[in-house]
Image 1 (cartoon, rainbow, N blue to C red):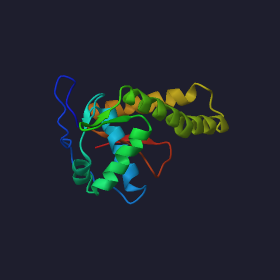
Image 2: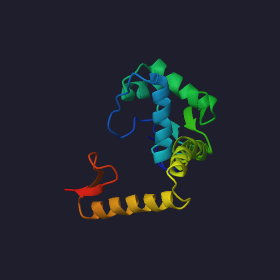
Image 3: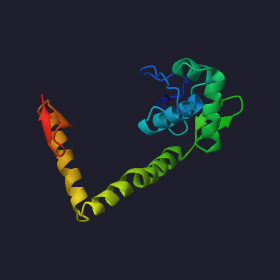
Image 4: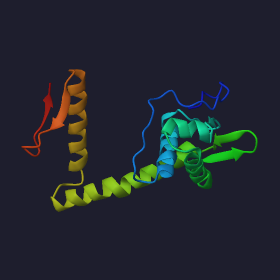
Amino acid sequence: MSGSPEEPPTGEAPPRETKHLNKEPPLFVQVADQLQESMLDGWLSEGGRVPSSPQLGSYFKVSPATATKGIDRLVERGLLVKRRGLGTFVAAGARETILTERRRNFIANYLTPMLDEARLLGLSTTEPGTLIETVTHGRRAAAALGCRWRRDEKEPGDERWID
């Protein structure tokens, strides 16, 4: 959404495909989530200017008030900073804060349940990592050959390449 540090921030809508938001969770939460994604993927850099509420409203197809509510949510968390008369900017350290939160959530919501399941299945502490490596390499090899990798729904555990 904003340029690199050497480019002056423009506040223009991002050069991405227009996002259509869902009905759940609330739209302002989805706006905030999309702004966070933009901070993670580099469209919004630290110190970069965030598009205005009307611009975001137009981009996300929501009212400017809804966009403002999404921005305010991130301001409250210290990820964005409002500068009177200048606009809203990405706070220093925002990307690292988001990454830290998401890592914690990833561990709590994915890794811990996966390891609990592995323990129930009697897998050793190293086997889940080995399985992840196998799937990762299988997908890379399939991609290199121009194929897709998928799990066969009819035969659980049967992973294969498909053309």
